[in-house]
Image (cartoon, rainbow, N blue to C red):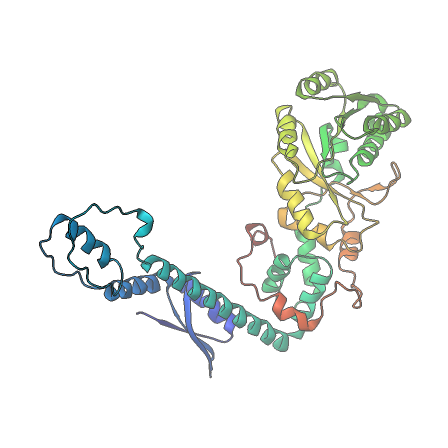
Length: 424
């Protein structure tokens, strides 16, 4: 057994050394504090599996000497040999013997080995969590400012994944301003000279129900009308499910003086787009579908077949898990960016900015109300960061306190690729 010893200043550094050398399946045999810091003795998971298999083979009973028996006696002997401590079979007259597969017990060696490995992995995970928790407690004592920043990030709505990544990259002499600059640096904001209103084209606004697609469609159309004229803008409604959806868009179109069309399938969409090819900007108001709706894939396929680009609308009041799922379900090659909506209703903007940063989704506009066209704005990064990093009320029921931090941040999973791409 080739156990290896690892010594580092902290338990977290020692665990990282174990993973780098022996891999994620390494088994920790012991850990203790030494003068140099923390000492961990570990064994590669493959060696433990080989050792377990060898011991199992050694423990297996040796085969009994073969004897010449009659056919019936030989059958009965092979049956009793499978049962531990079976009594010898008395001689008996030959008679037909019926045996079923369920009557023959299966050797439990593989089951025992699997249970043993499962228990060892469970003990390893428990020990790693305890060591990680100790590591975070040590960091809290050694660097209280760093743990304070972590707590503020989580209370602001940023994910634990992004918060861990930022703190790992945080220089010793840096503080909140550095984190704010990193977030700002990783926010992709579309400049107005490159905006969809300026460039023109055909765009569909997609997202879950109630995120504000129809209102945002009217706001974008109003901006284009002011700049290029009503005869250069057209609206299309593909929402034939929601009652009054087409009528609502028609009211906005009448106010703006632009044409509005209704489509129900791919063929109608292609014909309508061909008739509107002289327009500078064509906006499509789509059906609101939850991210778990099976029709999301068919909707994506329809717009891809027609060469329609999409803007994903993100509700700033939604929770992090919900926004993460929305992005994963709706984000495809045809999605060119997003528009955060309902900023006026959100307590903090950390969650929606976190999703935009980790998935690198360009921000085209921001929306903070129902008024058309006043409540659609160009992206103001300073305003977004001010709202995102505004201190949360400590008395809020969802705010974390210092005592809850070690248990929360003890997870040792590898950060997703989206967060590893962030530039410091």
